[in-house]
Length: 342
Image: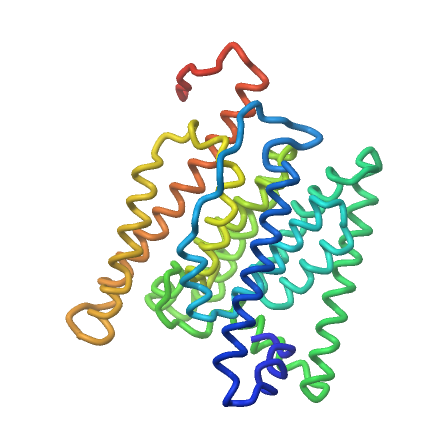
């Protein structure tokens, strides 16, 4: 947990803790909902300065994972809230607020730092001065982001008695993976089975795999940086070291922004069925392994693979649909025709 969180929760009287935290998490959900409304009203998902889809939007979908996250009172809610606020500020042409919000998100957790490149692209495209040099804009916004993050880290340094030990406890946990408690991710089981001499090598491989998506998506989908942000959030929900349903809930909340591409998806039923299957059986498998003792680690890891498979299919289907949408805009004569891989 980030050090600035500790005074917030430590100062709450024990008698008011339940009520205060319930109100706080409800407030975070309301702020997140407001940010989603602002993103939707901007129309940035369907139209950007470099690309406009001819398809129309439909209504938003209800997201039960967000409700479950709020009831569980996960601190990921704070990170999700500021990520949405950063995106909303970007589409509202407020790049400095966007960078400040992303700095808070990176301070709360580590992986939002990887959202910086597409967020800079989104800020640049939405800016009135979009014709300005992208390199200069990127340098200014990146410098402001790093400065804001350094300010937050300095506050934490002063709060913890002028010690940098919190860096290892807060961010080193993500980088070095010392805690192998079972979760819905893919890392824990792999590193339980890993021989110690190879641990550092595969930690680097796993992190390079996660970072590698950023550059490729930003280059291939340069015309739609908002979709790049959404896709990266979905990828992080699958491949980050300690994922939870809170990370998936953020991705599921953003998917309806691109409801105009739903007709282009091919395996929607299979993807939804896979996610529902893992959602319903995941808790049961965990109970049978940990509490009933009638299963083992393989038993629970199998259902986490199904969960990751479902999310991967959804991410892949969204990517296919957006690329198909771009292709049909560039080549209208191919609209409605099947695509064959050669």
